[in-house]
Image (tube, rainbow, N blue to C red; front, side, top):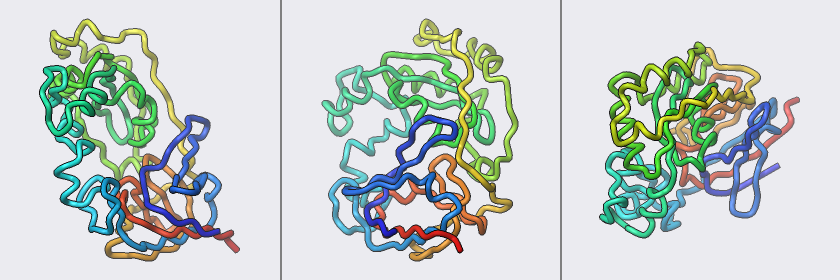
Length: 267
């Protein structure tokens, strides 16, 4: 069956396993139903997620001009400690920034390839953990704005990483760790402004991904270099599709690419 539309990060539903959906303007695909089937992905054109024009994607699904103009790509998104809405100071669009920054945020520990610290809006738990391919995660603090979450993350980065090895995550080269013990160990490093928001009653969340076969080696599919690809889908983890020939495709990393997707039964 043929589907066509612009790529955005897959939507997810918590379950055993997690359910994944590719959502287009007029249709959607339950990607779990594509497991053990042959998928063909064809790049058709670009479609910037902001202006909608057929311009090369620069970063995060936006063309270059939109990336430097839209509030959806402000520096505070990648660096929460740069948030200023709590000071009534505008970066690109104060109304939008207040809406996004002045809401409950979680600082968490997640384990996808190694233990890491991260920040997300409370409304994005556990979606953020799923997107990172974490098989376990736990909350550390819940603060009322993004700035407090950002300075807490910066303080904790002196003790744990804030990066994930996506190759190890996809190969399932992981080990379980005691996240409760890590949370308690890191308590002493939380800034004074955020320590009253420490969460000492949360348990680990465990996540199960729909993967039938993990790759032994990882070959990343780049639609700029390979505009047409065909392979048997064997798993979905994080925002990656995993294929039988060890090819992996980062859907989120290809946002703004307008594609055709054909799903066929394997013979």
